[in-house]
Image (tube, rainbow over all chains, first blue to last red; front, side, top):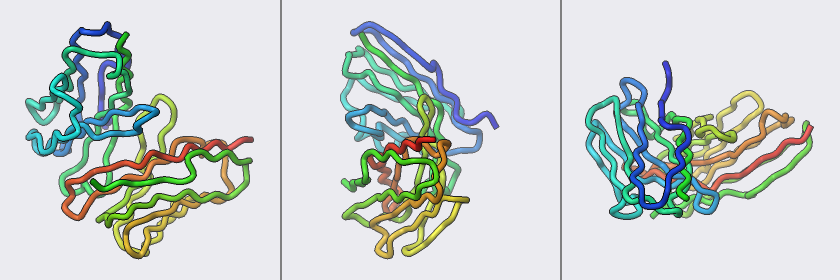
Length: 115
Length: 111
């Protein structure tokens, strides 16, 4: 089991550019979460999907952020246009069916720096 | 919105000492999870507690869920440098639709 795979591990971009973060959940997991972590705000839930359907996107900071899950094995988080305040570590996590209350498996994260 | 608070925020101890960190809320959770996060990596699930008053042990780590399911504690016996990391608690509400993380306790165990 390769775990939750995120790419890229590091991304440096200029303000105003589009950024796309990618996630491959563990096979068979039907919940997928996108979190953002900063020193000031800790881990914040941005959006989560169940069976590829977005369930709650109330954590998405603004319209510049969008997320998709076209199939059970792939999800993207896009920021357009990016701003310096978007700099953070973005994590993807997934959970087995019926076990979402029992915890998730996180990827290693994408460290985004917007200059 | 359900919130989780953790204390202390930072803890630095010597190898071999015991410690307890706390996770508190004014809300009831259906379950609480504890994670440990090391630099440059994602959080790793340590344990989930679901029943009020439940106690779980994982080697030198003891986890307890409060009777009212509003708080939890993590006790480490004879801490080792390998225990160093950020300890996060996370909870889900009774509907399984509110997932929140506490701010974490950053533990440093000095050799």
